[in-house]
Length: 427
Image 1 (cartoon, rainbow, N blue to C red):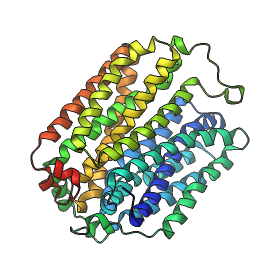
Image 2: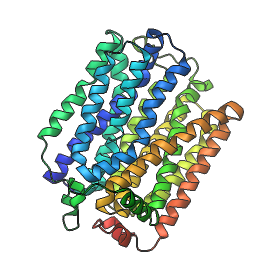
Image 3: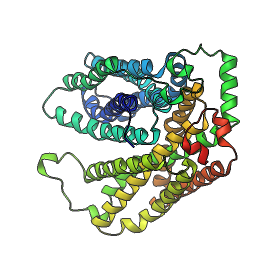
Image 4: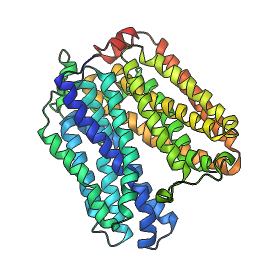
């Protein structure tokens, strides 16, 4: 179905902002190599500095969700773009690792605003949510791919301080576009009490926050939160170590990148291919959210991810073509689940708590989900690769069980209190 003008305007704004968030996020690890030499610090110390920014990226999602419900998602997204751009511009002034840390903390705080605010905007303002969620996810993958590529390329010719300022330019342009964009942020909930979505809601008191949280977690959202946390555990666990594991496979030995790109490993190329496949997965899944109950889609994708995890060890003993095909399938499935869980939040929560709901969602995704990084490192150090992927398969099957409980839960539409969505009715 063709998007209406309001849907297109929101989609363009959200896609631009989403790509920009991940553009900045994936540029930071490239800078890390330069900072190690510039400030002569240990890897451990640099890791703590970078981790501080990334931690706030996840932890800040919850208060950001509350702010989105109070002030409106568009204002929050604009504040996010301004804050991220300023944080990278201030990197150029850094004279110590402490100044770098301050800039990254600013980035983490402001970047944490986007996902609760941006997804709340889509869920309350867009009629064709599934389609826009799909394109929104694809835009994020574009930012993930282009951020490190642009940073590494610019660093070949320019000083890192100049590069940091140049990377801030897309954020500034996104801010200017957002200021000019015109759309109705509550168009999809016009028949409901969607006042909160446009920022007309009063600030929540502590009692109201506790009450709203209790209301969310005593309903189906508890299962949605568990699903998203499981997605985060699988996502972080597999993507953190996959490039390193791929580069250690016998099939990859003897394959050298082109001379012009010799600083990149073969795992980097495979990672980009995985992201491209992920864009296709997001698009297909986004279209399917308009046709099948989201809980059913979650069950299917989780089962697929479990099978894919189990298949890694036997496939890794095969040739390069089989490994590339495996990574393509993994990327498709891994990112196909994103539109389903984003739609699930929209289906199982009321519009006036949508920011809070997405705040909890990304606390689970980026915060709790990061625990699998430590678990994965422990398994690779003390067990085997097979143990890691067996654990990932178990995590995916747990997600399938939770999603199955969501599928059979009666009357989800009555809990959402708003979901004119066809999907909610089907569930």
